Image (cartoon, rainbow, N blue to C red; front, side):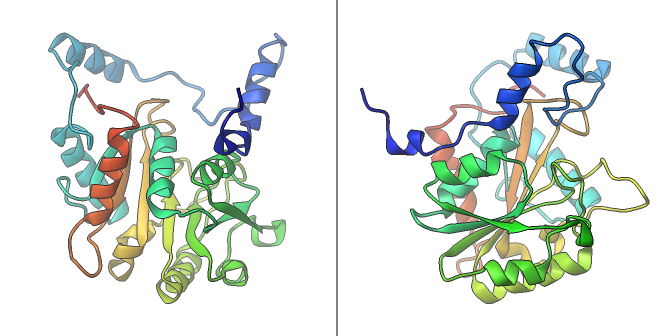
Length: 276
């Protein structure tokens, strides 16, 4: 039996290959997976156990339980300056990877281009290929501390560009795209009518007195930015609930993007966020 072209053209994860290979060597320090060195804090484990005992084991809204989305809205506002209506602008997914995949499936048509920094998290290539898009890597260098620059993005933009993925702080380089540079990239997306997918799971793992800036907090860019975040890195809750946010539609003033995400998610995963 012949497998689909979509599957055959999707690259295997080099991270997972090395992860499995490392298991064969007892003295190897495995740095393949982006996760903290500590376990999930005890109070989180206990809360999850209590939620299961209390009956939080049933199907939920595809967007996730509302109480969780309400708390996430508070977090987005307090930590990121992002104004999000929990009923209209937030969806909970099974990991940040699903949030990225769903976003690309909703935004990208076959042949559309998606700009990514190089080096980057290699799974972006697979996500883009599954969505039948074309990855466009933009080389970063030590000269700019491996930070994606607006100048480099401008050179990569074409009529086929649909999405720019910005991962700051970056996996694997740790590079932070500064506020000035992010705002310049934001000006480009408005001019060229494309979307930014801002992938920010490492937002709390920042040193040297630097700070994370979320483009989704810029009022004039609210209709051009999807923010993806995660519990995996900050709270050592790998594989658990993540968020994807997008503000109101520019023309209709309705959260049409989240409607499409929920619709697409309905055939990808039946429930989300059953536990507290």
